[in-house]
Length: 90
Image 1 (cartoon, helix red, strand yellow):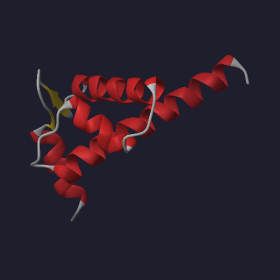
Image 2 (cartoon, helix red, strand yellow):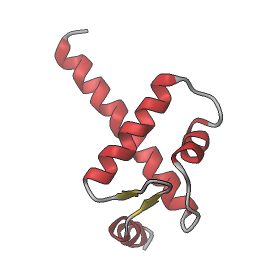
Image 3 (cartoon, one colour):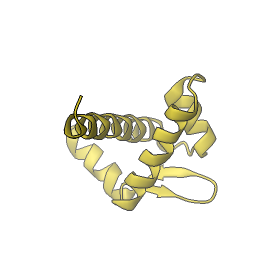
């Protein structure tokens, strides 16, 4: 696999993890989760460093684009993410 294909694969995997993280938080809203609880929810109690790192990156990246609030204690979807989810469900 060349560098370009490897980057595309990594990017697709990162997007998949971001989607799973956001979907999980939207499904569980208004329940607030800590990052540790989110890791358990998404990984199902299994998963090593790579899986946990991917979820932590997803939370960071989703927060950077305004879809998640990442506080010192809890991770939660933003109002924008919640509204978008409502519109998709119509």
